[in-house]
Length: 260
Image 1: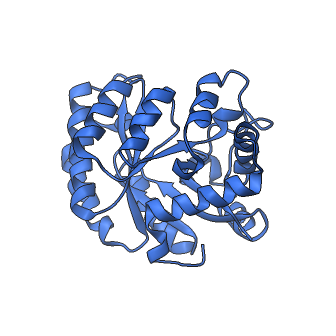
Image 2: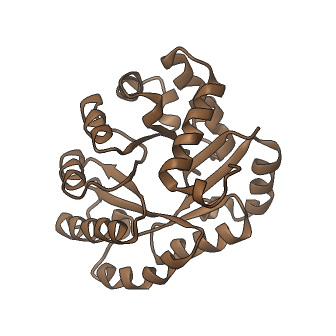
Image 3: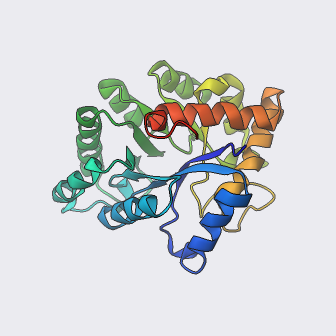
């Protein structure tokens, strides 16, 4: 049974241009992958994600504006995204959030983030949240709106993770947990129940050991699952199965396809 559910991928990335179709077919047919949610970061990639989702039965799309790519036109661009949410293969508002690493005005980031959270509540869709060097503001805004969804590539503390779980959200974990210096990620895994964790790649980035530095893909989630199993004193198959069920639940895909 295929159990790998990649809750956060970017197969629109140019690194996949030469072999995208070949790779995706291989992942679904021979590499144990049951589902992928491809994340939009702007209007173009959101549209691409929807097109990709219609090409592959087990690919789904998230549609949204990523904080790194915002500019003065971003509020208007939200209007361009609205028709995409009517598509049955769109399962989330994402990738959205805050990124204080990049020199994008923080006031603009917060404005667009909040608008997209309000949209998710209006549409009854979960969110996929990006949070980089903005833990305090991210948590405060999430507490204000209380959306369903995932805090992707979680980089906060165990204490912050506990607050996210209290909100009913899920913690997204990827290849970083396999890195030698991933003490914070390990402490989060130790403290968060498996029933509140989902797995992801953020591919083509953040490949787990032993593929760190190389192009990531959804099949490598097995290495993340093995590391989490080691931390949780269980087996990788159990990790894959529980996190698969979590992903199906948070994205509501059980209402669309019961056999994932």
